[in-house]
Image (cartoon, rainbow, N blue to C red; front, side, top):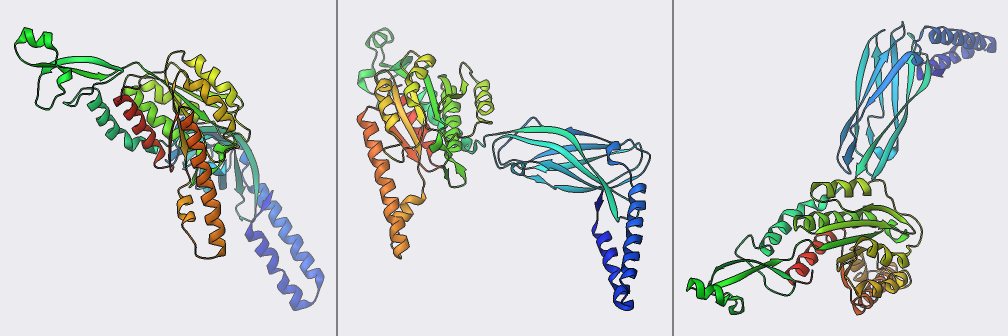
Length: 430
């Protein structure tokens, strides 16, 4: 049984006769009367356990979007139920409204809608619905918690998909679907066409020219069916928040954009998310199934506060692809000490594969490094300068080991990684 504010106000009114008569027995009598009224009100209230509650939920939703979650409440009792219901979602599900008034006649049902706007990935769960049925006097209520489990999977945001059309246009140019053609090591012969002023004379096909009695040149396109292996670090350094999202989410954004682009280029894309163990893996998916598999795999994974085991990564990459591949390592490059394991594993990868290390950088570091307003700002600037120097040192060490580095803010890293992929493909290195 739960009391309402009206019951408290009714009890408080009993102070008036006590002050008027200076008789404490008067207040005691008033209190007994209030309790009796409350008991009668509770007996007349409908039983909340006579309710049948069912959920209607979407299977998945993207982070930052909203979805409607329905509750169907049926009154199987004999009395009118008036009261309040609360749907117990996790706070990160962003459920609004949290409470709603209900009024249900016997053998009738109502449907209430809760809008979910989650701000964290993964499984967002609701365990129960708490119902408080009030009596006709609205002094007290009968309360019960009904088990109505439900969950919704929150997928990665993938806001970087806005960069996909422009990168696909550049990919079509590289692929020979426009008048722009490329020529170089690692490219495939595409077709023959007539010579146009400005074409490289080295691309002239002299045998075809002799047959047609007109200058004919060969056109080339980047090789297809290449392998792209993405390794996303889910260790402790990926838990740090840059801006309003963890580093791991930025790595997922970059992997999704690169996966969508490479898939359109007819390259084979594989993904592994690792720390001390393999947390998630996507292998063998193509076309539309690739992005679906990637977001489904990424959704429930959060960063683990453990050091990533980089010694196991070369063997993992070899188990995914034994041929020369583009291997993208999405990790943090903050401190030389934290990157020691990565640097030790790179030579085993660069001997066979083309390796690109992608790292998100906090954009506030440059602004802090240039601030000299007061003593506190100077100390912050020194700390920011040290962080930038550490990043430069680790990046230089990675380049010396034969890998490439792509870094940027959370908004800049996904398109920068896609641009590096297109540049490697245009140069015939992939």
